[in-house]
Amino acid sequence: MKLTNESLVNDRAAWEAAGYHVPGFDRGAVTARTRQYPVWVHIGGGNLFRAFHAHLAQRLIESGHMDRGLIAVNREQEGIHQPNDDLTVLVTLRADGTVGRTVIGSVVEDLLLTAPGTEDFRRLRECFAAPGLQMVTFTVTEKGYALQNAAGETLPDIARDLNAGPDGARSFLGRLCALLYARYRSSAAPLALVSTDNCSHNGDKVRAFVSAFAESWTEKGLAAPGFARYCAEKISCPWTMIDKITPGPDPAVRKMLEKDGLEGLSVTVTPAGTSVAPFVNAEETEYLVIEDDFPNGRPPLERVGVIFTDRETVDRVERMKVCTCLNPLHTALAIFGCLLGYTRIRDEMRDPDLLALARGIGYDEGLPAVADPGILDPREFLDTVINVRLPNPFMPDTPQRIAADTSQKLPIRFGATIRAYMEDPGRDTSSLRLIPLTLAAWLRYLMALDDRGTPFTPSPDPMLPDFLPILAGLRLAPGQDPEPLVAPILRNPAVFGVDLYAAGLAGPVLAALRSLISAPGAVRETLREYVSHVSA
Image 1: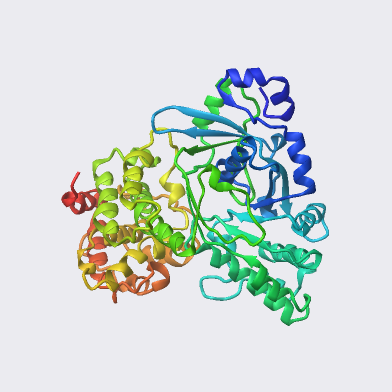
Image 2: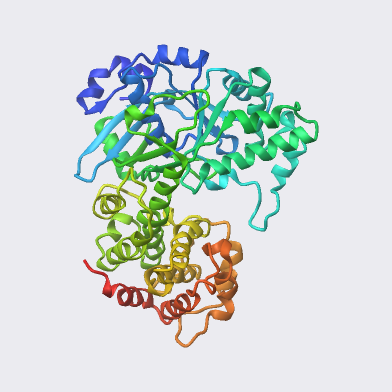
């Protein structure tokens, strides 16, 4: 079986006999309607998009609630179009041991965000100019919205585009704003720009780059006078919370599909370093909560499980997940997993010490500080994370993947809980024990030595060039005082979300770090000591 339109039509019986759900709609007719009257464009057509957004769209089309598909857009530096007639096999890895196989056919166009004047850009301009376009969703990672570097300096490509205008845009964000300008000049119809990236207040990140370009271009006379006002009044940037664990293509899944008879399942690494394949593997559990702010209408995604609510509720749900019930656990397991030689999160959950670490951070230290969002119960959410999602024996997620960009995650995943303790008169940061341990473990991780003292390559992180040389001054030996080296890091609120000295946590972090670096094997010994109080 080949993943092509022709095979799905001519060999449909073989696909269904092999246990695959095949799109139950006329893909040609959907494609034609989409090309003429686009409703939904998505920027960042990677694994999460194909496992989640594209599946939502397919279910809407199959149920008769939407008659158009998705137009997927990748950044130019990602470098490839999706092969296989834009089809994808979604492999759902369920905790009960069963595996779902679904052919996703809702993506009907695949474009690259190339330079103005190119064929793909002309097509995208047509899409953005269409008055009926209702929303543009994003999965470009938190880094994708960056206007400045860590020092607060405007990035060179952004600075250039702010002075170049729409026709001269070269950066990813500049070209997106050039497409918005094309919409303004064509119809000035409203539009929702919906970040579904896993970062706090993600809609504000979209608003920041749109405002920066619109205001700069308008002030400099590079865009029509009303463009900035149009973006401020007719472009909405809803907040969202998204949650679905979607690792990169797994070799074991590929072998399973090949055993089914599928051909051409090679994995490609893009110039940006992302692994893509004609299949995507993901867990079954998924959540998407969106602020209901769509000035030009929207697809009825509530019919396929998406929750629409107000901004305040989205914020509470996002803080529940990102600051308490999932992301902090993921990061802690990633850091300790790398140090202890694990290559799968699921295997870590069978380690009594690491399971106790996850339980302690979630139930003992995080849950007391969380605000109940009302639409999802925090304890039930956390129960599912601890008992179903992270231990899922079929999920191939790795601590190495989760450890990427940890410096960008710590302020939200742990800093928010620390601030909650600082601001609550009834709580004291001195009761926190496992969060300081995890922050110390991250510093120990930056030594780039595992618990045996064997060198390893840390996962990509924009702060590695700044921090690796500092931590290289430590060694695995007793009697060291790491404070002179790490004090500037501990004081930096950009790293941890707070000044750890002001929070009263610098001492506990330093004490844990001294223990972690005292000898080879000290990571395991320290972890075991710290989690000994956590109830099973």
